[in-house]
Image 1: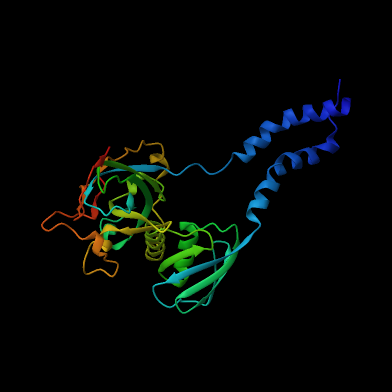
Image 2 (image 1 turned 90 degrees about the vertical axis):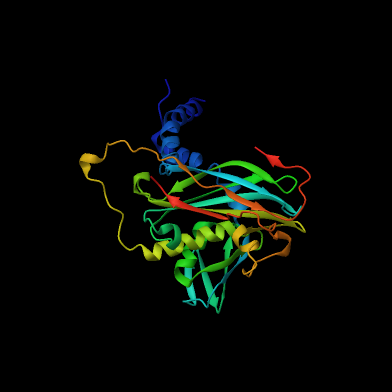
Length: 153
Length: 156
């Protein structure tokens, strides 16, 4: 009957936890330049957002960070500190217009809503919440280009 | 040899606990689906995709002021031959504790075009409105045609 060697426990746990580390570390190790363009001059010259330090001058903020990824959340963190962001990119990726809109909407909302959300009374905590059904009006556009075949679903 | 068996046995014993610890991430945020009918046609050929983004708010006038931002979602749809007609379901990930807190929404139509290998997206209200800085002539609207680039309303 084998007995567990308790001295091995930390090593085994470390081996399990770190098994995937080399792959992710390799992919994330390269550093990239980041650049954000602002609607107005930055409110601050140096801020920390999205896990990196941004240096801002006029309507441009720059930073360097690992991985090259961009995110709405990171953009929001920056916008809250320096103002509305109109461009947010690394050397390899950038936020699209719809993502920039989300970034600025969330940043603006975060600055306007100072009161914490109301907390439900304990007695009401278990009450089921009905999921509302939301159907909007139709979004529609008709341009001047000929449509040889309309796609539909 | 017995030491090796011991290690294997130990791994088998601790693996579930380790996996459970690794899986103990915060629960996924609640999602509100918003149904958005879309009818577009006559778009320039470089437009191959569209998108609808929706934001929700805990204030009635959040749909215009962004006050009480409560979540955001986006969904793309294909555009073939410059046209699309259908209903898009936009999954809105909520940043608030409960869907019952929501009072209003705003959904916006985007056009996505690929130019010289680059993906460029723009809100329909900015690409097609002659007074807007981003107005592009190729997105000129047919005279007299209806145009709705944004839908706003209340959550009930």
